[in-house]
Image (cartoon, rainbow, N blue to C red; front, side, top):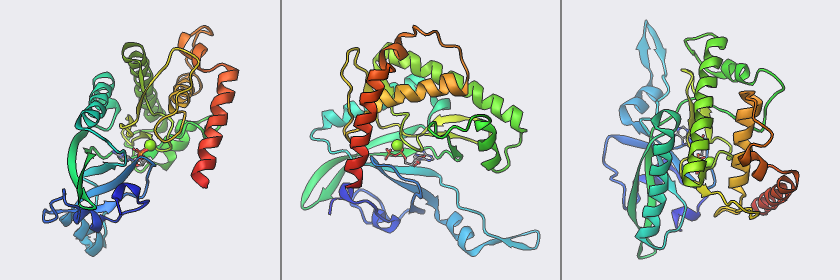
Length: 285
Ligand SMILES: Nc1ncnc2c1ncn2[C@@H]1O[C@H](COP(=O)(O)OP(=O)(O)O)[C@@H](O)[C@H]1O
Ligand SMILES: [Mg+2]
């Protein structure tokens, strides 16, 4: 069966794929978080995995340090009919990198492989991506106050107090909002900010977008675009942007701000909610 149709594939199975060299010093492990669009694996050094399972002696005590991924390996589930289509997808990634810069996103080496399946060859887009260790910032689960402090409490050793850490996150988030707004104005595209796990905060105060393969156009009219999975990710991403900007950063956005004025009208939001419900009911069935 085509790997892109499978819910789960194991790390060992990855080693058996025709485009993976299975004899290197690396081990693939299925990542415990996952999304709809990609199959994601940790790329671990075999030596690190050995220390994780056998342990090592530190100050006379046996410890089992977690093997930290050297990279994240992503296989995109998308079907591409031509090389041109795949290159277009990669160009969107480059556009995102040009707009956000490496500080605000998980950079990736995107590459095309020739996947052998059912006696045929198919084009598949993969990425070897920087691993971002941290906590998910879920814009839909904001407590009334102290969201950032709550996140701070769940991070291991931050090396800074909660106030300094929160301030650093806020500065990076403000830069993120500014860059996304620039991207919208200059290119007419927005990345998917809506998916659970797409935004991560790190112990050293960085704020990063890790889902870099769903970059969708914004339409200046009443059309509510749905993405390839049937989700209104453009509208919901604009809403997430407004949550970051208005609710978390508490920026005073003028009521006639053209972006929010266009996308976040009550009627439009109602229709987006309906499309979201439809998406979730299809997922469940
Ligand atoms: N480079 C990365 N570092 C850390 N976590 C990641 C990275 N890429 C993805 N993830 C996590 O894996 C999960 C799925 O990733 P995502 O990129 O959103 O996949 P999809 O394209 O399927 O939506 C998310 O929870 C995300 O936080
Ligand atoms: Mg995602």
